[in-house]
Image 1 (cartoon, rainbow, N blue to C red):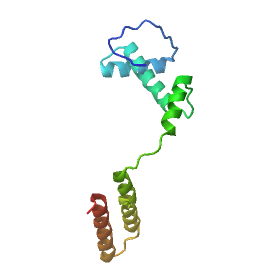
Image 2 (image 1 turned 135 degrees about the horizontal axis):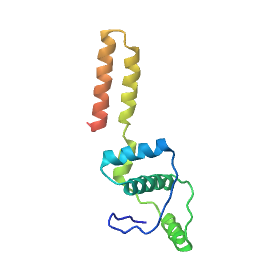
Image 3 (image 1 turned 180 degrees about the vertical axis):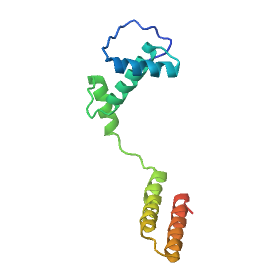
Image 4 (image 1 turned 90 degrees about the horizontal axis):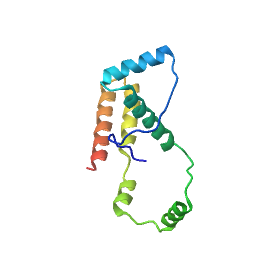
Length: 128
C-alpha cells in the first residue's frame, strides 16, 4: 500500500486518550508545525510498517507462493567478489581484541601493543 501525501483521506479513525496523552500529542503537533490528523496518521502508519516488517510469517496468495517457490528453486550463482570477501579476516576481530587489551593495559608496553593491534585492524579493514 503506497501512501501519497496528496491522496485524499476518506476513512475515519477515532481514538480515545487521557488528558495527559492528548496534551503530549498536542505539544508534539505544535513542535512539528503540523495538524493532529497528519501527525497521528504518520506515526500510526510508521508503527504499522514496523510491526509488519518484523513478522515471522506472511500469508501469500497462490500466485505469489508459486513465484516464491520458483525463485527459491533456482541454483545459487557463484559470486567471486562475495566469495573473496567472505574469505578475508574480519576487521572487527582485531578491534575486539584491541578493546579487551585496553581494559588490561598496565604499562607503556601495553599501550604500544594496543596501537599495533589497531594498526593491524586498520590494514585488515582497508585490505592492505
